[in-house]
Length: 324
Image (cartoon, rainbow, N blue to C red):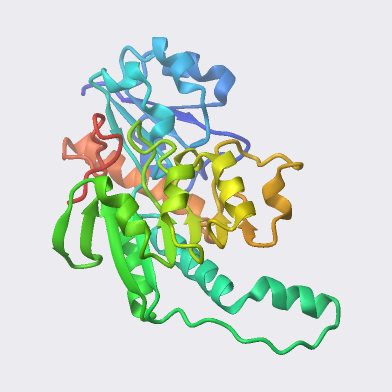
């Protein structure tokens, strides 16, 4: 284009650093804005960078996005921008696929080890100055079912394979041989696959097909000793059903990094359950993650200015970036 492109950058309290944004700042008119000014910033803008990836302000400002060509979200999940007007538009949507894969895989392994070695109880005994010999579980040879076969699921699969676990995947399409999962079964076969899993790891994207896929029926299909780990989206789970499954012993425990309502209310029963581990949606937040998110955008901006194909293009019908 003959003129400088206009880039709107939606931020929360923390602005992206000038140093890392230099490739964009030097080649575009950049409009930094909070949610209140988003519609104003979008007027005439060619690009929208959602550095505030938790925002729900985009649908309300979309009327001003008539010139928008490309929207990039600083997250792996794109459900905040999968509203009908964006789906039906010609705007290309990209995400930050790849940034969080390794960190989330390490988190999943840490939670599995915490369950197997009963580290929370060890901490409680230490705090009460109690010396109590106990035995722990091995994770080698145990079965992990990873529900969601995108890049985060693959990173989890590789790490769990490395510590000797049996790994299977559950995804949209079944396949008999897969380099990371071995076997991938389709979502239609999920109840049967759950019955054999010691650990069930949810990493699926949030779509209309996956919303509330973990419910009373799903938990009932798991073995009583199974543990559930959710690092995908909170809305994958019907939370009341999970609470009941934990209370009744239908499943043995849960490690939860995401919730359908965040932050989790202080009076929610999950907080006080001894077989539950809660973290505040930070399973992928390693030191330097914010800078990594900016770099993904600026690298893609260079491709966009040069007229090259963008990386991490979302299939708006599927609601995620298809696997290569």
